Amino acid sequence: MTTRPTLLGYVRADALSCAEELAAATDSLALFASTEGYTLGTVYTERDAAESAAFHALLDEAKRTDVRAVVVPTLQHLGAVGGIRPQLEFHQAADLR
Image (cartoon, rainbow, N blue to C red; front, side, top):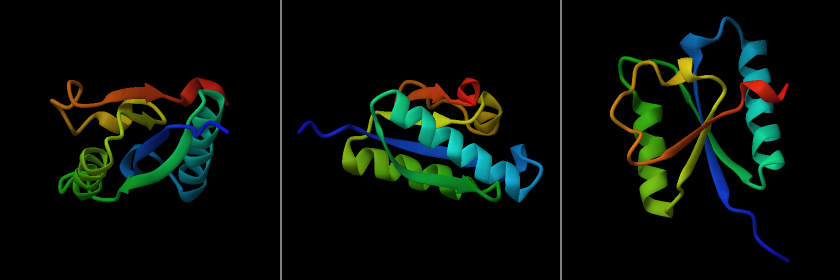
C-alpha cells in the first residue's frame, strides 16, 4: 500500500462571509487533496490576518514535517501574506466544486 503525501490547508476567515462558507471551503480542500492524490492534513484557519498566527503555524508544520504542498480555496486567502512562494507550492481548489 502506498502512502499518500500530506497536503496542508490554509483558509482566511476574513475572505469568507459566514460559517457555511468556511465549511464549504474546507470541503473543497478535502476534495482537491483526494482528487490530486494527497491526504489532507491540518487546515489552518486565520482568524486575524493582521497577526498571521495560523499562517506562521502552517509554515512551522511545513518545515518540521517537510510538507511541500499547501492548498487554499482561492488566491484571496493569500492576500495578506507575501514572499512565501519560493518556500511552498500553493494550489487553488476553487474549481473543484
